[in-house]
Length: 412
Image: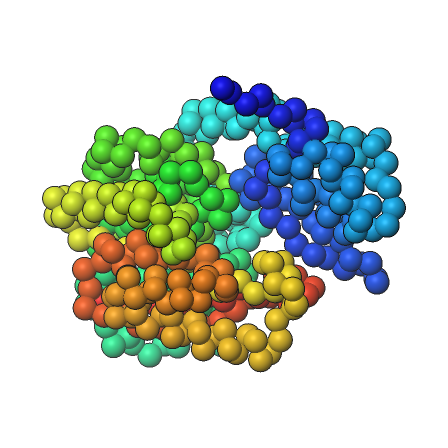
């Protein structure tokens, strides 16, 4: 016996959007936006309307939401107003349904027929002009927060990997530079496997693209040997390739690679977005899927024979109202989180992926370590003797002191 599908107009489903609290005078609002880039819109909602859309989960009817609204705010929710809200959200592609699905198909087709993956964040998160970008990158290295001019103790050694931030370059650029200075002075390989966090999530856990990447400094080529092998071996990993268009994690690494490596020699990349949490590892299907993909990639790299550098583009903890905490972080809570971050990175330095996962599992991922999947993937693949934390910092993301932490690490 089949269950009849629920009417999406009466049981609306909000897409996987991101939100952030904002304050204007004494009034607080919530801004919604789409991290996949399918919708370019932003929507500012008062708190009572945000309460409504939080119940757009496909399980609550509009009538049921009206009852919850009455109980919460002590007033009736006028049907015309909520119907207009549903229509507005659907128009903005914020709801699941035929309109959003049609937009997904068009976006996928447009991406797959385009010659390059465009530099969508150029001019927003970093300079769009090539010469200005070179000066901006140099400034990250020479700023007071950047690495000094003292030679690295690993100078001339074969570098095996990096952990670097994905936070906005204008703020975190000097922390990126700590990692890329190690690459600059190392014996550089020709191939870079770049694992980036897919912040919008993935159904298949990994998403690879065979598109070359455009940047203000030129074109970064995907590897013509390893990427086709992965496409043959793991076709499902290419089904969500369009997600690369809107995600920034890999794009933010490419100007550094071009500036540090590309001025000396040609190089190629294997761009892999990933999205799985340590808490999902209790699901054996998830764990097995991760194991199979990483084992296959490791076998392909070994058979290829070329030296590779594995880059994990990752953030660490996410603290504050924007990320689901009930209170803004204080100096005390930030410093406590910093201690936990540095403890958590010890098994990363020691190349112990399962211990890294276990640390976050023990915390029940309460600090929302978004870069887990990228760092875990690096640890499962890398052939190194040790890792080292080079620099640690944080970024403030809203008026309520919501905080993201990140670090640069090198592996030799």
